Image 1 (cartoon, rainbow, N blue to C red):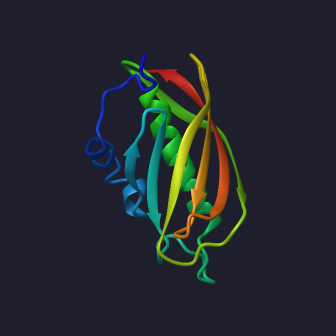
Image 2 (tube, helix red, strand yellow):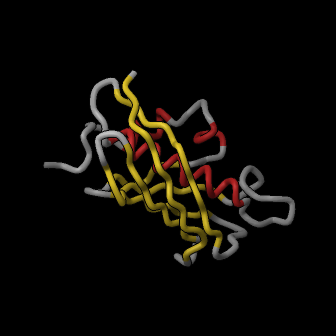
Length: 139
């Protein structure tokens, strides 16, 4: 059985991300793997803090956006997911280029999910590690 329960494409994920914060700050989904999701985010005026470093909140937006999308892809029908807790450890500063997030499931249950998102700088050095807990809701 496939890990993802919804059939989609990167084009569809990126289209759905327009007109909201995800698209506004330039997050782009780049890989829908067999069991993980990847996305990039620019390190630019939209995502840095006043001292030119990637804003920790922007890293959290990337992490929550990826975990929420991955969580949605693990649901069916009218189900949706909402984030209920997120944490992030900022390990290294990023100052230019793009960061890449890699999202993998730690737990996918009927009513809750836990996602780990690792964020790497342009040199593939780990910048941030985040964990997102989502709740599956029926609409």
